[in-house]
Length: 187
Image 1 (cartoon, rainbow, N blue to C red):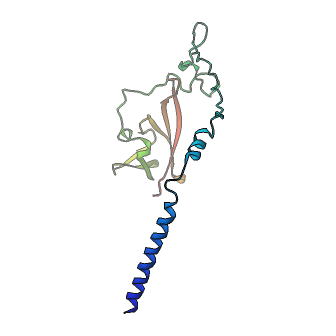
Image 2 (cartoon, rainbow, N blue to C red; image 1 turned 180 degrees about the horizontal axis):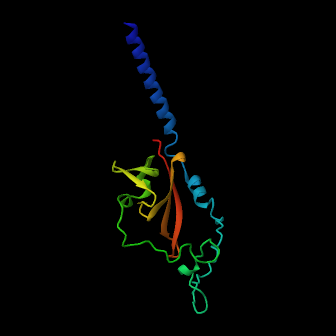
C-alpha cells in the first residue's frame, strides 16, 4: 500500500472515531429530567419587579397673545435706525433718476465687471472695464456702472483703482449712498 492511501485511511478512521465519541457524549443530554431547570426559569425573578420612575409632569403650553394697543409694532421699518446718529438715512429723498438713459455697464452686477487698466485721453483719466461677456468698455468720471446706480466719482491711475458712489435702499426703505472701490484685476 502506498503511504498516501495509509494516511487517508488513518484520517478517515480518526474522523469516524471522533464522530462516535461526540454522539455518545451528546446522548447523555437527551431524556434527562429538566423539571428543576424549568422551575427555576419560572420562579427566578417572580418576586422582583422593575423600578420605573414616573414620568415628569409637563405643564400645559400657554400661547403668548400680543396686544398692540399702546405698544409699537416690532416689525415696522420705522424701528430701524441708521448709524448716522440723527435717525435719518444718509441721502433721504435722493432717489436715483429712473428716467435717465442707462449706460452699457449698468446691465451687469459689479462682480461681473473687472477693471483691466486705466488710460488718460487729453488729460482726462479713463478706466478700461471688461464684462463677463468678454467686451471691454471705456468709462470716465461721471459714467455709471453696476446695477445700483454706481457713478464713477474718482479714478486714481497711480493706484489702479476707481471709486463709485452707489445709491441703494437701506433696511428701513430709505435711499442712502455708499462708496464702492474697485481695483485692477491682475488675473
